[in-house]
Image (cartoon, rainbow, N blue to C red; front, side, top):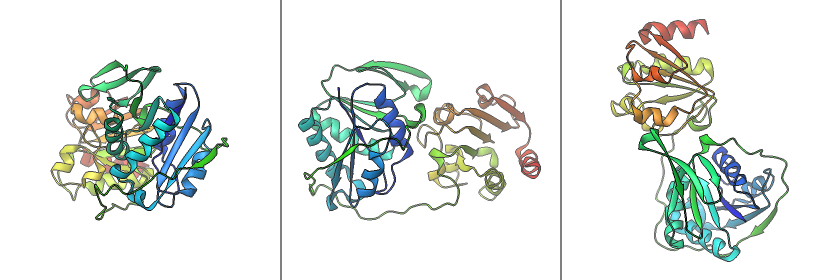
Length: 311
């Protein structure tokens, strides 16, 4: 059985989420093909060809695929699926994957399986439901499986060791259904939130935007990424690109430090797969302590500066 993985990339580098998706694809067995679509994406295609376990790379390089608009990407993917007979199509469960794959599923007239965390066999998968409070085992009878993968549930495939061939696709065109207007990108010297080895997050207990400087000092001391709960984002303490949780970003770092975060289930859904969880909260009954490996019942305004100083 052949499997098609849709690569998320920036035209130069393949994302870590794609490497994890390739690991999920390996569990299905069969040859793995990676489709790299974009404008000026030759370097990304070359990088994809060196990933261990990849048999072939399909490159769709066209101006219509600039900014990866789903309305232009989806027809390229569906035509590749039909032409080559792929039975399973995987993409990272990121903003990119969540934007493109529903349209692919609709064009193929199949149901999408979202955010899988385990591959049981070629047609059976596990995925979280109810904000991660339960795990559903789902089985698809569709001839073609269209799937997004929760990257934090799978290890990253080795980015070197492969020698796949690269085939050019010439079927890209502008559908005229959408156009790119602009974007506002956040810039930070800190590691990217979803791929960082250490994440330090602040919650409602931080109490103000100014007080987040306390969290930031600890974050920078550890060389970590900065996160936040939805409560902190909604209160205006920090921008929403830092939000961790069911409606934010899903993270699974080696170390997650939750400061002033009570631990609502929506937040836990976004970080409970972290390898080591440390919680600092003055409320000893806070739900976050139920999943924390280490808990400190203390006032964060005393504990965090002291911890930063000792580090």
